[in-house]
Length: 60
Image 1 (cartoon, helix red, strand yellow):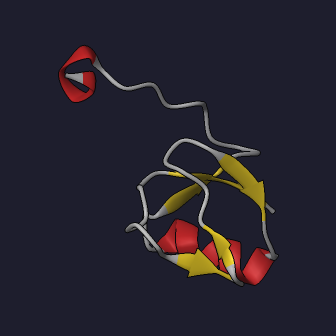
Image 2 (cartoon, rainbow, N blue to C red):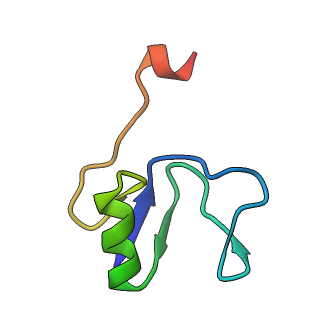
Image 3 (cartoon, rainbow, N blue to C red):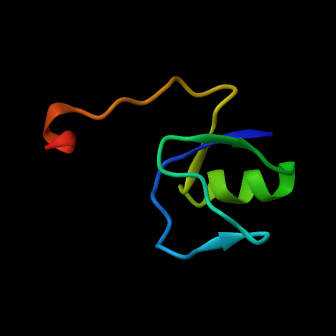
């Protein structure tokens, strides 16, 4: 399942020995793990969710 990260993981945080994708980046990960991340609000399903953009307030 392809997910898009909604948060930036802490520096040094690893997933299976590799750094997590940065906020806004997408990655294919196993469905069970992806569903957990989506349910917890850490990521969204990149295959069905529209691409999010930061508002001018968030970008500042």
